[in-house]
Image (cartoon, rainbow, N blue to C red; front, side):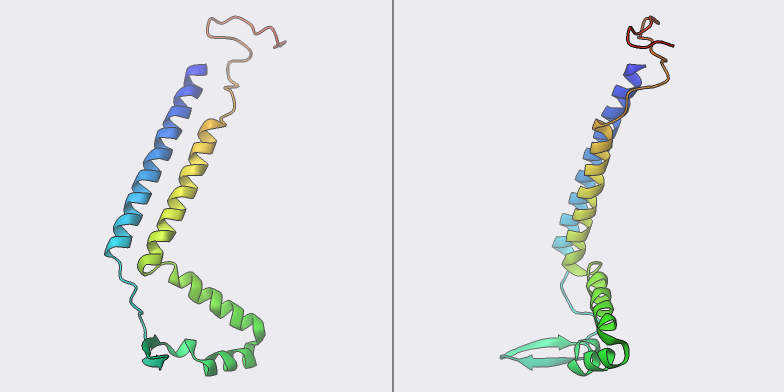
Length: 136
């Protein structure tokens, strides 16, 4: 039954390559078509000669009030929430998709190359002979 393990290994390696190609291809398409616009801007702020979109959640007063009512943990949780939400918009989505594709492809390839030997043969080889190291 060694051929089944070899075929499974080949299939998993092919699936790994397919996941990698589709994921990276999708990430390239997303990167080229996405804009890094700011959604939900409540206004604009002029700072250092540049105009930047400003959301109410990014203001110092909001952070002060958040820390006053919820403490540092609330401020950190709010920053984490905005960071995580930002992963799914614009060009950062392309990097997120590429990272996930690379991770899944690597795990699939790793599983494919580290498959355990087939245990259903009970110590017999392809010609139905006992293995000299197997004593039933």
